[in-house]
Image (cartoon, rainbow, N blue to C red; front, side, top):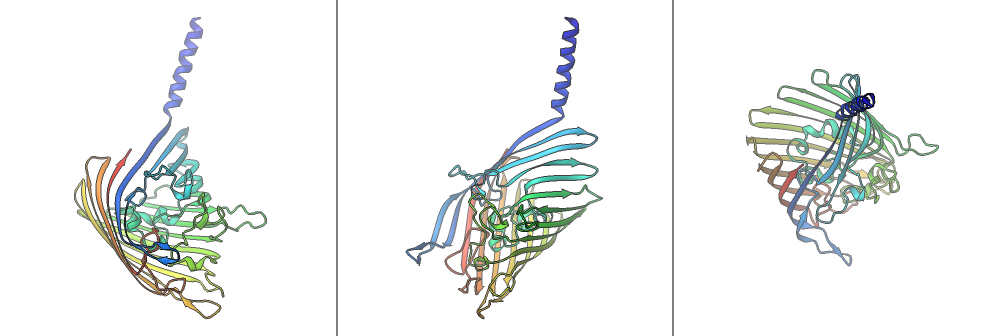
Length: 394
């Protein structure tokens, strides 16, 4: 009997120790705000009757509302099994974000080693998001649609996630990290169809941080669930605004981006550039190109109070289709502002505002209209959006 009790005690100790080497964390962000738009497109009976709009919104703040589970198990020798399941949520309706996809933000499993790096598989962020977003205004100021470039063309606002992806990230080599990923299209008889690849690098030393990334994906506008642009549950596509909706025939999507931030006392200064291309965007095979340049400044008055501003200029180059029509010569000037005050380590209040002016000819051949972030077309060339919000992290 004593031996049995002793064996049970030892088994209990081992079980507790094994349990202590594993962890699962529940986390999330609840971000809610009142959002005013000066000019929102609204078509009724074929007529544009767009105008002012006031709405309660939980998806366009500094962090879209979400909840998730993150876990790790120590396998010994510095190796860990890891996973993340993260779902976007709409606080006002209780619905899933990301087009109704249950774990639309992230869903992956993998192995991580401090010596050899991390290998993960599932629905994940691309290399432009991983390595360049932290040095874009969207990353170091506000992860909000209002700080995205028009239509989030370059995905620096991570509107897009990559399905069926194998991703590798290196350990930190004296401030340098690199990574790459491949997305498998899963099409029988066409190994590369619907897939893509991505690579990037970042370097941080003292006050300086640099990042660069490259993405290339084939057939991004495939049927629901098969293309990069249509990989959400409901097949919604990012080619919804007139700035790029004329390019639904595109057979490829490519982004090259780079940027950096430098911290001087309470100030963080950032510069970012991106080049976005849609291959075979129109009949006749011409590609459509967008170039975007951004500068930003964040000033921290104290630990729980900062103000920030960012200016972005985006230009779409003209494209001539097979019929000789020229479209896509469009220009966007955008100014975004933010002030944030922390009530505690987990709760803060903020004010966000963005003003955008569009000019030129859109991808559809009509006059260009404002398109802040991926919130959709304005009814004319000018748009202002202001948001007052409350954010709580857990």
